[in-house]
Image (cartoon, rainbow, N blue to C red; front, side, top):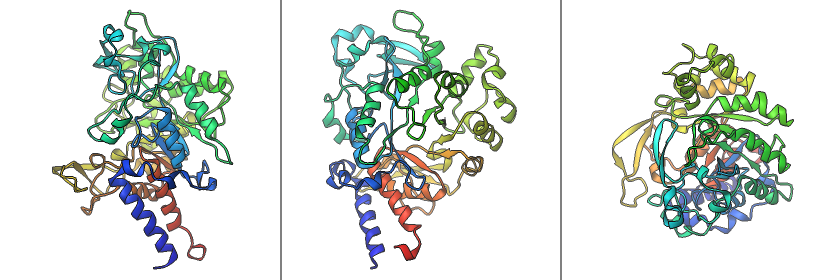
Length: 433
């Protein structure tokens, strides 16, 4: 075996094991011993984004999850942002926190459990906008999906909810030795926080998450456009960031338009504005003219993944797009499911069709970066390849780089880093190997 093949074999062997036994590999010392040059924020234009930190190994959206992602080699860490009652941005996947904290075990907060309408759906639980930051700091994080990630549950009760400012400061502290860590914040439910949502006492929240985000970045001195991407599933708040909020603050940071399922999901801000008779032209500018059939009650994300829309987005506000991997690479359901990892549980439920949605080519042609979500190592998140071979997270990540994406979100950043090294090594001229 040539030295090149030996190197690849070692990488594939270690990471295939990681895809099957993620919790064990989280503690591998080699992850933290990489040399600084392998942590360059932009390695040949390819980045690894720690999705909610290293959420495959630690409870998501905790400083420990973000820190582990950085030490595993992630170039960017991703905090989802919601707001407290006193107007502080904190990192949680949702503003309803019963699934990610121990709030239900705090009798002093029992009377704050309520039901609210969030993006058109009734949700019952405890909500960040009904707590001050000091109150939230008395809670502790827990694993959101313990049935899939039981090893993460051993960390339940250990970590606080971090503020966005604390996440930024962590990235600043970990940026050393020529390495610069970036952050990739997402505004969660911006229409709800700005217009629709109410606190427990009935008062409107009336808070712009985008404005708070930029205010925090400016206050923390973290406004280098090479180290920040701002993302959202809603369109209006990104357009507002580009045209109003960032110019007022004197900053210009790249914006990434997220896409939910192309066929079944609709942007909530569009649904809200239509229901309230808003002037769509004033809000969305020329977007309505680029979408086939205009913007209406039946407009889905897939209708906004067309070539004209992507060109318009690039020209007017967006630097990139973030589609789900299952929209970019459509899957078919498997019946019955398969047990691909041999653990006695049949959890592999889809098969890739072999089709690549043309959005990828259109976005790249328009000059948009493409950062799909989410590469995850556990069997329920994986798929069969079109030829019927079970795919690992490592294989999936290498495939995505091969299709031309510039980065992806992953719950296991060590797998993403190894996939990038494999991809670059495979594309290195033979004389350099």
